[in-house]
Length: 262
Image (cartoon, rainbow, N blue to C red; front, side):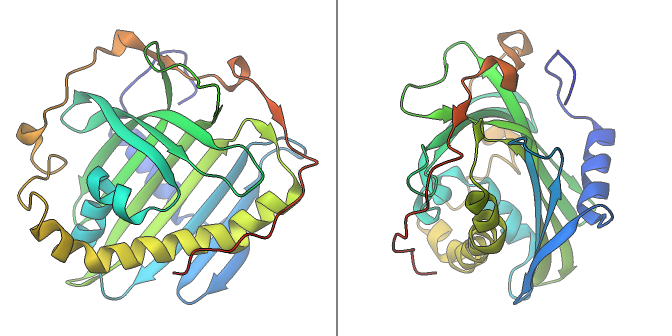
């Protein structure tokens, strides 16, 4: 999404994202264990922008359930221990909306937040959800957070059978900071695999949870159920990294905190 004007992704954008999810050329494998593989891509040496791709084989989760879990914002607040705050701001079309998400970073780094335009599309028996950063006048950067920039981030869920799927997560993000090398290493070697495992675990408990929490409410499948206010595209602009504060955390040392158990 390199243009100046905010646009809603079209079929070509989804096809391009899918092709990159499937491509391994130009990527360096950094992790491969227990059905989870992680690749990274160095874009420019010394720059904070990084690209990461994770793929997980899920033998006991259907693609439809995975798609629901990735969409369900109420359920995310329950299972995602990194989330600080997340909410939908408004809708653009039947398959695109704008939302806010803030998350905790490994200590002692400052926490990040982001405003994104998210769009989604079922393609046959597969699904894609992807986003990129936008600006909205009512949600400026906050004093206590570093506003990160999602250049393009998303998920692809591929059906493998009635109760199995492959989840691919790909992110090109500018965290707006000169990060120490240990952060990048920790992301690919530990944080990304752990996040994938958490999603898988969340999927196994979703059906039971959803039965007790508005079981028929799935606006990502049934657009008529949404209560979000429509936002005109004119209220949005593409979030440029250059316009945000850049934080130098390159000298920050790692602290060994107790990790959540999976």
